[in-house]
Image (cartoon, rainbow, N blue to C red; front, top):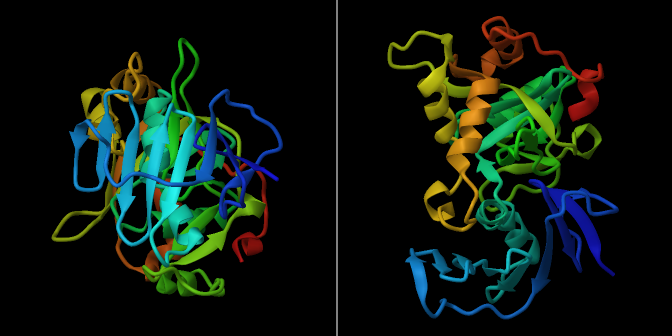
Length: 314
């Protein structure tokens, strides 16, 4: 029995369940990937890119390693072979699959993986970009409680083909949260935390699985060290630079998809979407007011696609 999913603009087929992936009963993107368990070599024979955890050869094959967890071999753009480390759990290896391995597959298919949370609104996708620990997952949950639907907790994919409007493909139907964020949002802890200490919250009931055009992008930063709380609009080259900084594995992705031009795709997105940088107040005590604080300062009105109760995230 095979399971079929869709994530990051890829149709994914696996002989086992993939927790957090959105179930899809048919292929819709034209980019089908097979996930399988099998032997993976410790190294590629003639890598043209050789890094401590990543190798790429001239054929486009990619080897990614997570010590103590698994090795991942990406071949022919259509297959991911996964070999578990001795004693490692499959669920842990599948959690890492949602990061670098699928981001590299996006590059191979001409998609641009972006490190950003995403929410669906009536006007299009709202992307929240930030470094680790800057609160984008927590803010995402606060916005979901207002009725916005989740598209991504931290990784999504940009597609800009021909003259079509650039769209964002959603990531995974789950959110990773620290215990203090769950407490601030009044959400019960869902089971046990992962080895990193965060909890995995299912978002299947409030997930948006379809690609959407982008309405706005906000790069989040904490206001500290005398920096004033504010939101500024980025235009032209400044907007392009903000979006370029959201790319995932941009260096490793160069050359994986001949003919694709990530800079051109990002340039088109920068020209069409409202791009902002936000220096916002740090601290969970501000969480309830952050959505109103943000929307009062971005020059675009956004409304949730469906009005729901605040209990949708519980």
